[in-house]
Image 1: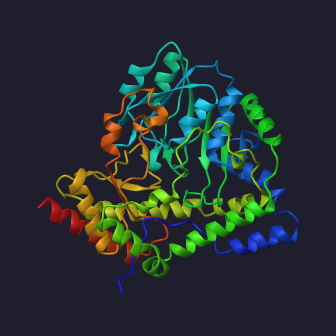
Image 2 (image 1 turned 90 degrees about the horizontal axis):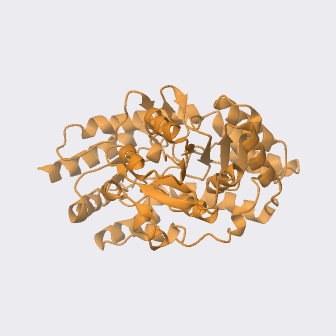
Image 3 (image 1 turned 180 degrees about the horizontal axis):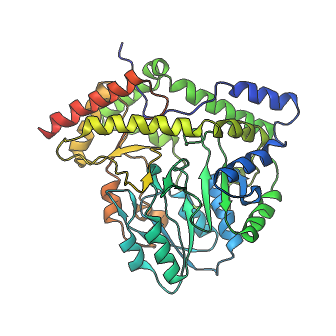
Length: 419
């Protein structure tokens, strides 16, 4: 039987169940001291004091609280990349701001800063650089633009924890940053997020908002941990091969995309969903404390895997590998290559899937093409090209023989297509 390799791999601590059981035994499953300890550890990693890191139910809602704490005038314009997760700009709209979308450079998947400069008006108040797929944006030039126009910079680091720009960790360049701790993110706390805020006054406002929220129910958090456990079970090669992979195999043949059943429904987020308006529980913080100790190890492993695939794909005509400029490090939340688009790209995906390598083609949004943002000012030609990328598995959970198989299979398929 063909053993398939999933495109995703959750970073899991072997002692996860022990951590959960310990929190239950101490009566600290929802409330407890590990929340403050986790915030302090996270802030310290970024050279800040504990008051600057505030946990939240999601990274996206941490972003919303930062916007509210900044008290921007209603209708202020805020610039996002045209290639990003739709929820983040939608929450800016919920906060009363006007969303503008700048284009992205398809070579880096990050903000096209020429586009940003074209779109700045006298109403612009903030820019949100998304360090997409784990590659930091060009922060020197972006900060120079922001300084010239007196704009606030809020970094979207949901993909990029562990990445650096000129030796400095992402999330430490602007007024604030959001981080996500969903199951497949660089730091897996089975959900939740964090606002990292440089200004102590703004940080205090964010904390006051979070402290006023209710605690989640034990039932909700138990269900969240169970879902995370099921996800990591189904990602194991032999389980994946006999459960989810056959569905993907058939879907690839008939040009269907079963992933849509797992995506969050695109909709207005006003009023805010109930699960957004809760606090981050102690049990997830306890997992986060231990996971932080392994973050550098996981990052180094995924970087090594990416470098192996980079070498394997070198020299194939028409294939653009991920860029990693010398002044920054790439966290490779996703390893994406750009090649042919349209039917030819889809055919390459089918060929890889038939050989047991799970490759994805649509994994981030182009919000200007959504009805939800149909009236927004936008430039998106580069974003539409970048959205044609193919995601190749390089996650830190892959063994050496598995990453060798991924690299060999993908190279064979892409090189044959190039010929």
